View 1 (spheres, one colour):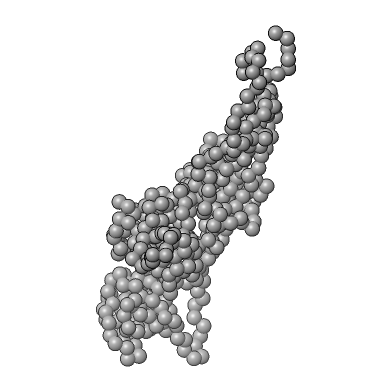
View 2 (cartoon, one colour):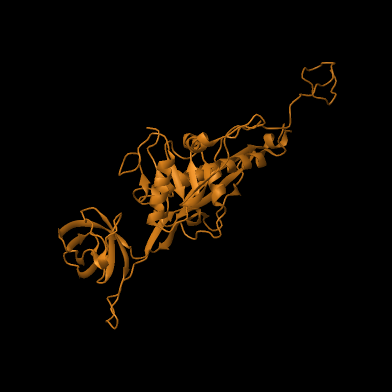
Amino acid sequence: MSFSGKATFTAGSTLPEIAEDVSDLVAIASPTETPLLDALGDPHRSAHSTVHEWLEDALVPNSDTVDSVTDATHIVVDNVARFRVGDQIRVEGQTELILVTAVNSGTSELTVVRAYGGSSAGSVNADDVIRNLGNAALEGDDASAARFTSRSRKTNYTQIFSVTVEVSGSELAVRQIGVRDELDYSKAQRTRELIRDLESSVLNGVAPAANPQGSSTVRRTMRGIIASLATNIFEPGAGGFPAGSDLSEEQLNTALRTIWSNSNGGMDLIVVGGPEKRAINEFVASNRRFTSQTDTFRDMVSVYESDFGVCRVVLCRSVPAGTVLLLDSSRIDVLPLAGRSFHYKPLANVGDREGGQVIGEYTLELRNENAHGMIRGLGA
């Protein structure tokens, strides 16, 4: 048979060529959304070292816990340095005012006047929380001893996210269905995967126990949000936190109130997985009303407004089961190392192919961990 220049399905066939009926659309069902990163937004600055540090400070606390009661006028506290002569204090939940008349730093003991100012006498017991209402100085008195707090340096580490892209020369040359350039398509797909992995690491990552700065044998990993939280961790039925296997509004409000009491944070994000999001939606189930004209059923709470903050409810696949994160987004940044945000880096060709790396290096800066909180252990 003579050469015709045509390509046919069957060599020598006299039938015309048949075009395949394939849509120019590549359907992808894998999850690619990153709701937490979208809620946090892009940072306004970059990290400039693989060991990223920032400073935190705090005011002198105005509350403490009673260790023991020596007698009617002597109270031993956990942190005596928080008190001065002239302080008015009150046991939380009571109306009695107490005046501090002497502070013994050696024994952590306060000498006090009970029922100060004609207030009604109450009781003081071990483990009671006492609040300092304010100090009254004497007119013309000498200056009291200076009080100060020390700034603390916090640290996290950058983590390298990398994947290799490689396409053969033949694959680049052939006509693809739904894809104009196979190399560009692969770059886009691998970048989506790395951003997805970045969000998961921001939530769940931990730093190595030894050599967290990394080495030729130790991979450098960032410490995520969950691993960074230590102060406000709530578990159902523990420490007076309401019991219950499913998230309840009472549990959520208790956690929000406790965080509000311990910090000046403005919580604005509630980050949850699927079961906890459904539990939040059920908060308003008893108040839903529908009429015969209602043709759309809405069963979703996207913003939860309480006395302690207006919080956007973010549904995120990377949150562990049974966990609710209560975050102040103004104190969280996901920072790229300067010049190392996600980009494509071509590699030298050593054969009939083209390839490179999609690479990026990021860290998490979670400031004032006591301004955030976590409920865990739900659904047990």
